[in-house]
Image (cartoon, rainbow, N blue to C red):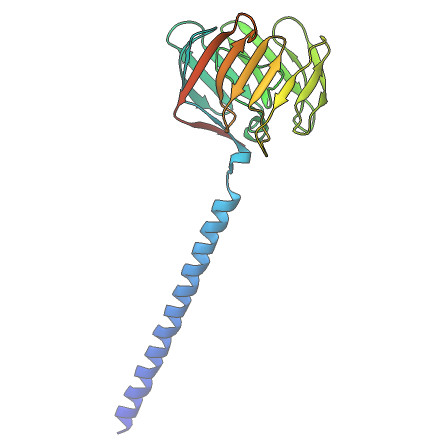
Length: 220
């Protein structure tokens, strides 16, 4: 009888041990799921990365062509089917995410954010920024131009060469969908990717229509 009682005690102890471990496993699973969700929410978000097309196709207007692009570190390189290779260097993904992304063969020098340099063949453009990642000056090959008078999203509306820049936003947008200055009109989609360029819209109206494919990222 004592042997049976001992067996019952051992069996009950084992059941309690298994039950406790099952509960611990359930807790561990829940903790693991919570950790994964936290990691997903605190990892590289769109605000920490600038998203870039892997392929551009521009038709009509100026600087049309097809570009295939790659990313290495903070450098975005686009090779055309003909013409000059374009190399764009970013300071960080977070800074780049504040501004629009231009077609490789075009440069909207006033709306650039996070781009420190853009090399089209042997033609170099450089950009400087303040601590808030607002552009303070650029040189697109004709001398340094300082910019100022920022809008609520940090884009300059005035330049030292007398240029006035106008930005149009969709409701709640932080990146402009249209930028105009001295006969140039740059149009962007909801993700800040350029979709059209018009030179002298009220006169010559030379329009480059732009399509993109694929997605690359530069992140902090």
